[in-house]
Amino acid sequence: MDTTDRKPGTSLLPLVATWFVLICLTLISPQMGDWLDGQELTQCVVAGIIWVKGSLVARHFIEAEQAHPFIRNVLRFFIAFTPIAIVLTTFFGDTFVRFATL
Image 1 (tube, helix red, strand yellow):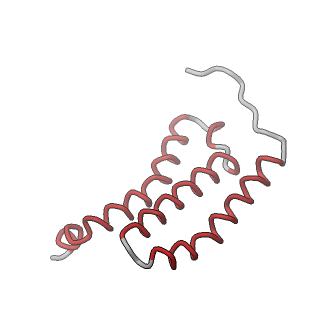
Image 2 (tube, rainbow, N blue to C red):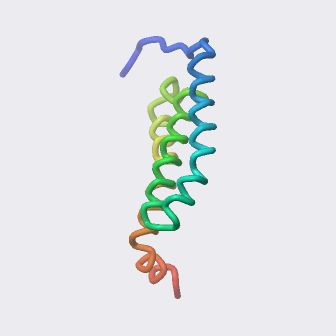
């Protein structure tokens, strides 16, 4: 068990830099969608962007590293779930549709 006393950061520079990266990813996303033109690669790029943005928010704004390991792992699962679901439905969508129909 880690008994070191972890303290949240007090510097605004990492927060501002993270905010800037989040804004850039948000502004770049529509252009990437137009450029890739609806291919499977588009969904993989969207999944990657969602994962990166979620990880940045968890690390710098929620400060997941400061949380209890259980909470940190739940947060990691929550962040990874949507990108994984997007990639799986992109490549195996027909299989999921068959499971969902009665």
